[in-house]
Length: 436
Image (tube, rainbow, N blue to C red; front, side):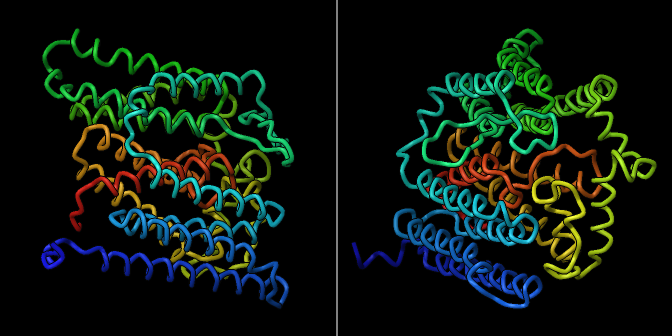
């Protein structure tokens, strides 16, 4: 049998590609960390490099484990995620050094979870079997947030977090809406898996279509009501996009998209007159300049940062992104645009575009419906979240308040994003490898 091994596809070229890409990511991260140390203190010491070193140790360990125990995994997903998380660590050191320890801890923990999800599960059958239980758990956590939620920052009245009673640790806060996004994708993927014949139902009678979509609409509507009640409009928008996209992928009916867009516009008009937060964000998007020193201060400062960055950027540590409120979380992309310029901004966009390409590639090549819908749903969720915040920061769309995946500060978002990336890597190990 060994004499016939040359007939089998080899993963060595892929392994070399993955290592080379990780090396390039490390070169980028460490060169920027060194530049930040020189720009800030005029010297380089351990306080500048300890974060990137922890990041490199976590990523190198992840690559080694995946190459050893899952050699058929997609070789481009982990380097892309590593570049974004490493960039985020350097950015947090620049914008909010007091949050750097937590950011590094969440990245290391997220990387460990990513590797565990890729290597440990024998199958994902239990996700399909307990889809209602998992979604109900997410909804109960969201209800608990309505009753007992707090805001650890104290910056706004939004209370999206629960405090986790973990002994011997500093207060740990978790945002249940982040988990609920993933649980909704799992629920939809499992539901469509059991009803793959939906394509045959479309056009065969209104009653059949309603009976098919009614449970989906009921569960999704309940989630949306809770999110609107909580005023977490960013998460509600993501829910809507993921739901609409997966229904379209399952049915292939363009009328679903048209009707969904119409409902979204109607909901936006209603929310504009019903919720002051939505009114503020739409007014700031439409014309921020009359309130440039008050309610629209954040978006105006973001536009100034975009303009100051130009093509090549001011250089890390040499711009003024700290003038933007909450820049380390909601407006991380604006800081990148100012200090890395248009080149850096396009680099971030390119990373998410490649991540979307690899994710949809997995969905196209998946042999089972559940895996196909799960890969597509996760990819759509990450891509839509990145697009919404980048479009909001650049005033292409009203600001939704979501984080930039893998880059912005936020433990809940970082951990759940790594869980989703781990699921994509797991699916890649179960997919026949066709090089696209």
